[in-house]
Image (tube, rainbow, N blue to C red; front, side):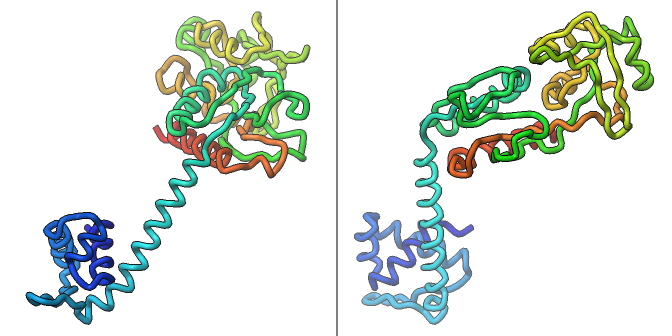
Length: 298
């Protein structure tokens, strides 16, 4: 395998006209420079220099290869410099709003990883299931579920294929059984979400063209609490799959009616203006997307 430092020594030797001059320019020993050239020639299976006791000159193959080596060294150095400068730009404060359940249990660990990779970034998090008013509240970015009502916002998909799923704990299913179809949801205790005095007790399944009016003895304006009730075996929940993926994989919750396609709830990273889509925001978007894809694969 070719090494960048070997190519660098080759180019410098050709420019300087001698091995000792190249070694002085690169601040290395002549023996190290000689070993690098030998290693490069062995890797290429080409003789790059014709050597005598008094001179060192490029072979025809060496002259031809020099053009490519010089360009390769230039591009590799430019690439490294671009990455280094990009990392230096990843600094500053991000104020992010996000929903309670996915925020605490999924996004928080992801953001911990992002901040560990880019320690110059500071985070200020606002966790609530109430949609943040980005024009009035001190928020730079928001992670939001569902289709966006405000078309003026810039929306970057994080989990575009995310849907709601019906889930319950094994303890609940052992006691009450599993619904055989959507109509049987009406005889189960359904854990409902409420927000701004609106109780979401009509669970929609657009692919089946069906809306089910559900009942239950518990409701909350905190989606994390609804999930915790489901884990405790208190009833059936209709949750974003992203919220419960880890629970499903661990067997803490079971997927009900797996052939039924639930409501679409894509997760977006949202900001107010295109000017806010900075290198930091782009890197955050790409990082969150990668974490979501990894979660879906494992």
